[in-house]
Length: 181
Image (cartoon, rainbow, N blue to C red; front, side, top):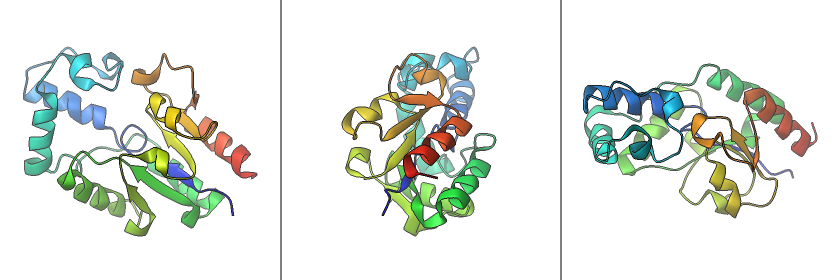
C-alpha cells in the first residue's frame, strides 16, 4: 500500500492571507500591505500588527473567519484532479487548527467543498502523519522523512531552499513520481 497524499489547507487551498490583510485594513487601518509583503509565516511581523492573532481568534469566534476563507484560484479543481489520479480515499487533508472553533469551521469549509470528515486530519503535529505532504510552510519538512514534503510557492517561503518547491502542476508531477503513476 502506498502512503497517502496529504494536503494542507491554509496557504494551499484556502487563502488565509487575503482574509488577514482584509482584517488589517478594516480593523487596524493598515492599507499599504499586499500578499507579496507577507514574507514569512509570522503575519503580525510582516504587516506590522502585533494584535493580529488576538483579532483573528475573536473573528473566528464571532464572524466565522475560518469558514469564510476564500479559496485560492484553481485550488479545488487541483484537489479534484489529485482525487481522480490517486483515488479519493488516498487524498487526505492534513491541517493544523488555530483553536476549537477554527477546527469546527474548517470541517464545514472542507465538507462544503466535498471533502468528508473521514478524509480530514486535524493536528499540529503533521510530522506524525505518514504520507506525502503538500504544504506552504517550508519548515514543516524538517521533522518529516526526507523527500516526503512539497512546498507550494508562496511569498512567505520564497527564500526556502528545501523542500522541493513549485506550483500546483509541479506538486502534481512530484506526487505522480513518488506514487509511481
